[in-house]
Length: 134
Figure: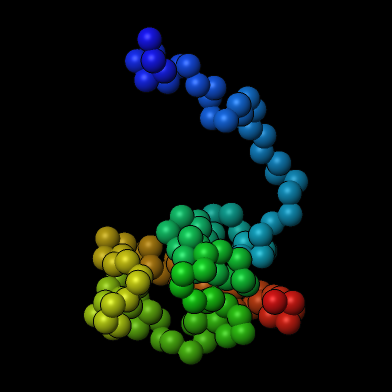
């Protein structure tokens, strides 16, 4: 009998991982909104950003490398108006031909407001020292 015929139980569960441990004492990421209240709009926006945006975008040079950095040296909310940003996030291709950013037209206005509240909050939490380090 071949391995394929026996099924997946022949293989060790993922790469012999036997334990996962979460360390809540670990240092917070530089894109974490330090000082924001857990139930605030900023934290809601951070969680949305972490789930939807950080794979492509960076905040304080932490995150993906496909999209632009959104906080340093200037935060995106410091030079783009909120209504513009909401429209752009919902449908980037209507602003830029061949935009690599996906359409987020499924996001409710409240979701966009919370993401932009997070980004606005981070304007006061820049890690400018990281610019010279890279």
